[in-house]
Image (cartoon, rainbow, N blue to C red; front, side):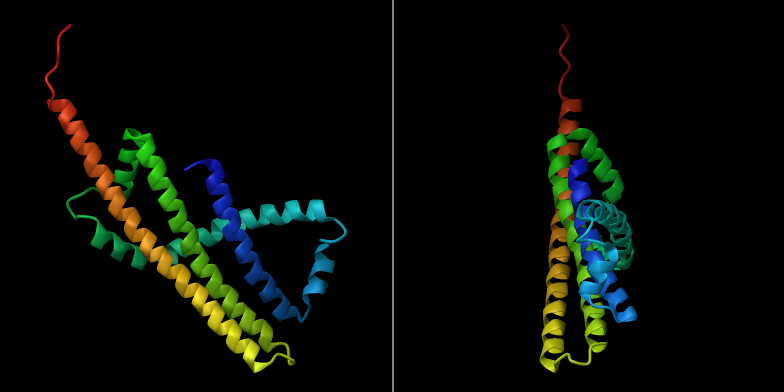
Length: 199
């Protein structure tokens, strides 16, 4: 996986996290979106503010990615046990072996892993966006009940979809990782058994 792909992945995660952070701030202070824009100076100093926001979003993306990894770890371990034979080495060992043996397979697995991480962190972000949006709406007395219901249904729906995608991609990733490891091991075994020709 390239450095650019990792940067974009963490940046997207961080930008999503900024939404629930902003909603939390607005709920706590009673400010409106326009007030928040005025305080941050987005309209007056767009270029400088955008750079600062992107930098903060990137760092926030790293934090959210690690938090999602820890929170979903028990489920992840369950998926690993179901998809990877107990006789095989650990996931980290297999990844290192594939990375050192085949650039094409390592690139393919890196792509799957990037999608996996993005879906996982998006699940956490969408859940937090839903919760903070409902808190934000509860602080606005003019909010209609139908709006609250719509936000709840849509938010939980997106959260469930992201979680489902993460589980499916995780299953595929671990299955392909095990297959790639076993394939490369077989190729290595055949090379070692091949008769050596003398010049």
